[in-house]
Image 1 (tube, protein in one colour):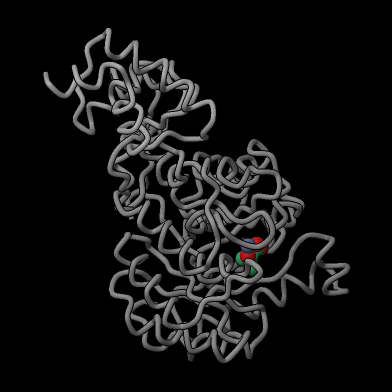
Image 2 (image 1 turned 45 degrees about the horizontal axis):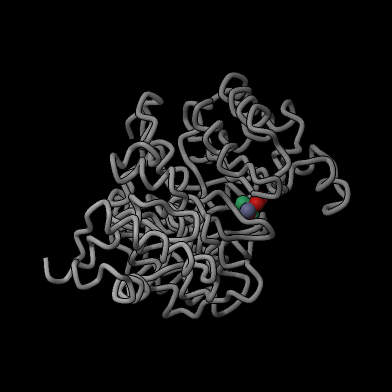
Length: 391
Ligand code: KIV
Ligand code: ZN
């Protein structure tokens, strides 16, 4: 892997599917997995095989159909979880076991009623066992975001020695600020013996709306994998949104970091996940929301009609959206009305536009959005209609 390539680890089917009420059946998961593979993700986390027979079956079936990506299964640091995951992954072209344990003092004390040394022992045992099934073993230090960096470095060093190929540093509770998360990755890069043998991975949750910013700060500081979901779905406030990190890296080429994602498929992918899960995507969602390329205020519309780049930093076609939308509302100006009227066949002179614009404003004040049928109606009811159609 080249040093400027960031691996995309998609966990829509595992962390993403933890959204309450969004359970997918195996058939739906297979369709999504196939499309993720076509999209160009490097790793698909297909599920948590020991959690239920249904999840086991999904991971097994996904393993059979994925052609390019590595297929990954989640486990706890528990022998049976690891054995079951290895079994579910046995048909995968390339398989990864993702195992781990909580490393923050809070997890160690309250969840495990244990101590730091015993946790390192369990982590090493899990990685060693996973390694007896597959070459590619990713270790997660759950709640790494709130784990003291010194201790985290010791855990990382021990699991690398046991054979971990990827070190996942989750900000499980979405607590870190971007500079803190970036500093954590930098600290591990600089203080873990053997770190060159493993890839550091960012896994950020969005409880404070910082998941994307934290992941980007992570890769700037040396991580080379981002764990993310389509539309940012996931437990509580969700995970890092795949479409956001991909487009941030693409729109900022001077960072010299890129992914293998075919960005023109992002919008379709977003729709597929949202339809399959019955989970509506907020209209102002970055990159894939219905309003991400829609302009409604007169000043913006005039700017975009003159030159798209005045108010758009991404060409909508690059993410699979056919074109920018000029939405007509009572805040729209003459330029937008003329543009939309032209699209449906009316070339208006300045005087005709003035006349129709007044009628348009009266109409728009009583309707949230003016559509093509409304424009026809406004023009047909205007004094200048005859003049327009006889021209
Ligand atoms: O958020 C988290 O810590 C996780 C781990 C299980 C990887 O999802
Ligand atoms: Zn998570």
